[in-house]
Amino acid sequence: MLKEQMSNEETTTSIKRHIYPYNVLLAMNNMDLSNIDLTLIGFFNSLPTYQITKEMRFHFPNKNNIHFNKRRIRPKAVISDDPVLVKKLRSCLSKISPQNMTSMTKQINEILGAQNYDWKDVSEHFYVSAIDNIFLADIFVKLMIELDKTNSDLIHHMHHLIKDQVYKPRVFENTLSEDGVSKAKRYQISNSLLITDIFVQKKYSSKYILSLLDYWLSSITPDNLISLEILIKIMPKLVDLDMPTELIEKLKSVSQDKAYPTRLRLLLNLPKRL
Image (cartoon, rainbow, N blue to C red; front, top):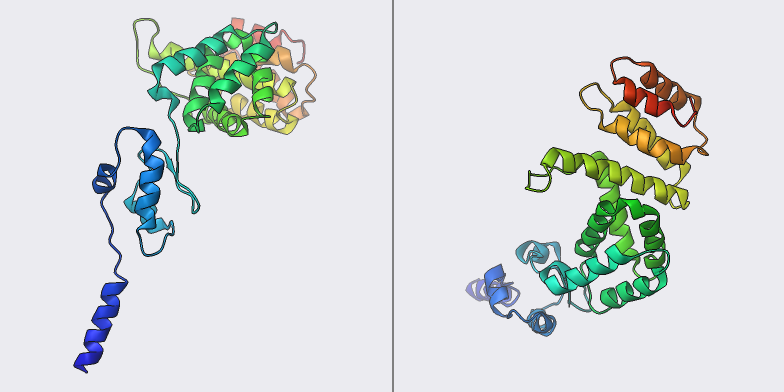
């Protein structure tokens, strides 16, 4: 009986797994990201069985944007950590025009192809540049279509940012150059213009645009006129959209409701659709 118990204890000891805390794992690396790949491969190869499990993901949180893969662990570069590179990327995005579209797209592709980037981080820079230069929305949409051929993950996250801004508008703090409320409103209106230009380029379906129109119409109140201003901005670009009778009636109802400012109701009628 004693021998059997000792045998069981030995078996238990042999398969016991050691869970290292994150700080111990981090101590095995240095600040040079180029070494993280080799160091972590060596670390995980020293485990009895190399399998990425939920347990390991829990004990080794993704604080350094490490992409876990059974064959390879690839560190993802965060473009925001390099001010020079961010400045170069923002410069390309702000200079883009119909005349230099090809050359600027090539430069941006060269920047993005130099590292294994965290696309969520990169897409934020693209999105902010598009919002800050919304008068070039059609150019940015064409750039997105070109970059989708080489960096589809970037455009995938870009679309998520655009969608999130509709249903979960960003909130900003006051700054010396712009107060938070005005900036939040600017982001919402500019985002809607970006969506409209994407639709004009046939990258969003009519069904999706109609669902957004219905959402904006439903969210208009006398105390919240942002959605009404959004409709005023985008309706002239949607003159060819085949709208159902129900939506047309909702638009008429808002345009005739004296609870809203006369100027806004007049502007809503300008596209001559109602």
